[in-house]
Amino acid sequence: MSGHVIPPHGGKLVNRILEPAAAASLAKEAASLPVVNLSAKQACDLEMIAIGAFSPLTGFVGKADFESICTSMRLADGTLWPLPITLAVDDETRSGLSEGSRAALVHPDGTLLAVIDVHEIYPHDKTLEVPNVFRTEDPAHPGAKAVLDEGDWLVGGPVEVITVTPERDLAEQFPERRLPPARTRAAFEQRGWSSVVAFQTRNPIHRAHEYLTKCALEICDGLLIHPLVGETKPGDIPADVRMACYTTIIDKYYVADRTMLTVMPAAMRYAGPREAVLHAIVRQNYGCSHFIVGRDHAGVGDYYGTYDAQLIFDDIPADALAITPLKFEHAAWCNACEGMTSAKTCPHGGDEKIFLSGTKVRELLGRGERPPMEFSRPEVADVLIEWATNEVAASS
Image 1 (tube, rainbow, N blue to C red):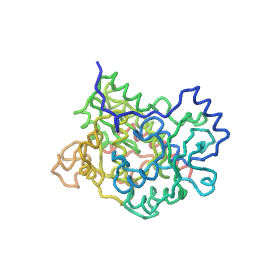
Image 2: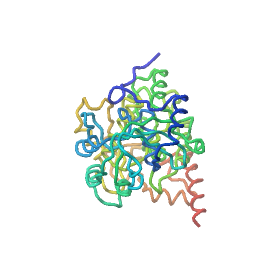
Image 3: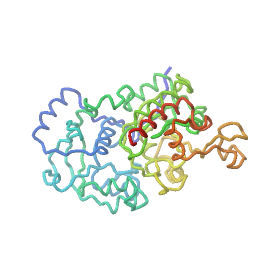
Image 4: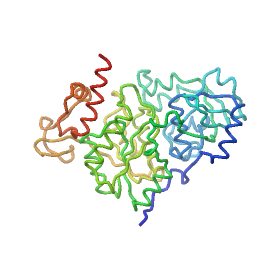
């Protein structure tokens, strides 16, 4: 049995990773090229371009695309695209580059990753990017700060990629779960899944997340739990701890034949609504037909309204995006209903609900105490307790 998987965004799945012989030849050429040392975010972006997760992009965007994305959430050719994927460099690096030449792209750990054809070098218009993309100019916003701290020049052009996973880091990169879009698509076909719902997360799955994913799974053939494991902000729970939480809850509480767990190596921008659109496009490229958009998706602090990331999809024409967003209300356990509920399904007041702040949960975990089972599965809580108590011990 085989399913009919949704087409990629733009109609064609990009692959910029070279075959071994071509990669070896390019590595020799790269030894004599000027070097661009990538930031952690840029290395994540390079991988997402290379594997086709950012299809139809074949490289870092040029000036026309940059300006069009910032002002209208479109590439210059009209294709929906919400966030500029840029290669920012400082004055010193820019002085060694020239349009029409090539440059080597190097991972923060020193590994040669790729070569870029330098089609354009243009000023990094942060006054255009920051307020449009993040809806704020506050330098305390982590995504805005990352852009403000970047170089003042942008390098645009296609990339040819030698590798995306430096060997010295491999154990931390979840290689068995790091499936590129071509492989998730093949897996969906093999399983006969035509409709697949993706769940984006950068946190452990608690009972509300479990409820959302299982509601969505009732109307789809399969579920892809797809955590983001690229660069996140300080204070976020480390990827290896989160992965232990995911495998624990999936093994215990999900149907194995209907559930997949793979990772997405993207960096977080915390751009709220625009990033929700990017996350949807990426999951379409991975072969998913539906995408869960929850409360404050990709948000941070109080920069965005609770459901802004859902409302933005209402303004996207039907022919611009093939994947279907599934918009969920905030869910919580209701003692009166004796189950997980949302405002759509439960008539009871907040005094019947079990809500816990992130701060409260961390306090409990740090003391070695499980949150209520109505908030978190005990098996997941135990994984987090081990991490949190080690954190407390290390900081004392």
